[in-house]
Length: 279
Ligand code: DGL
Image (cartoon, rainbow, N blue to C red; front, side, top):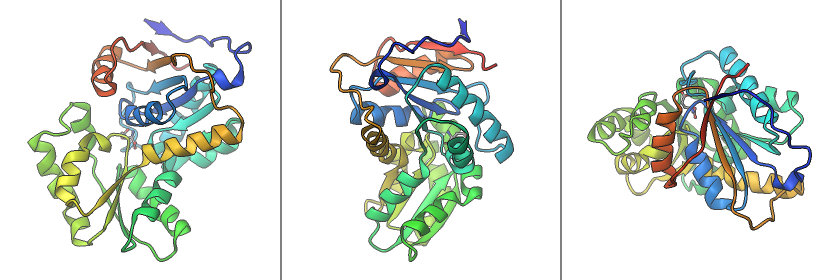
């Protein structure tokens, strides 16, 4: 089924409108999971750009173009806040989105960096993400803004994305890829590691095993869920209704795979997943 219409939302009170979340694909469900846990009364509308994933190996210019289209689509659905679950978009396009769209917008970088600063004792923090996120140096800048004496060490881990999409987050192949990617960060003796990509929490167990128990893993999505709550309170648009929340999922291709993986990942049956064509 395809869908491209705008839904009428003028008669819905602002508080009851959805939180709009977008990502390049399925990985943003880690952020949805954190939002469902932290804000259980909120309605959520999700867009996953499954036709154009991955974003992390594309140029900043192209990622920005996609980010504008994704945001416009969610605004047409009448959401009250936009959560940019994709770290790649958060790293290269958040300022452009904030200055262009008149709606509260929450990205992943700032909340993740603040949580990491709080967690670190030795002030040596690792950051992993896509090529675009690491290349943008957004996390190191945000960490320095938080605490100028923090030293950060970054590593792109592109193969984690297809492993997560394949449902191989705990597979032995994931463990050997993690050994390879994370060895330089272990040598730097970081005590905190930012999982700077939506997909990486799916490999949480493997990453923790390789880094060792003494290293705190920071899930930027979880940190962002607190920031979303803060912004909703600040704007007086927190949903106080105790009704069962409504979750809608839209993707730009192969809705069946998204539904199958999404139901396992969110531990829910009957996810409503609709294929849309972004005009
Ligand atoms: N969602 C992207 C991110 O969080 C990872 C996958 C991709 O490369 O598109 O950076």
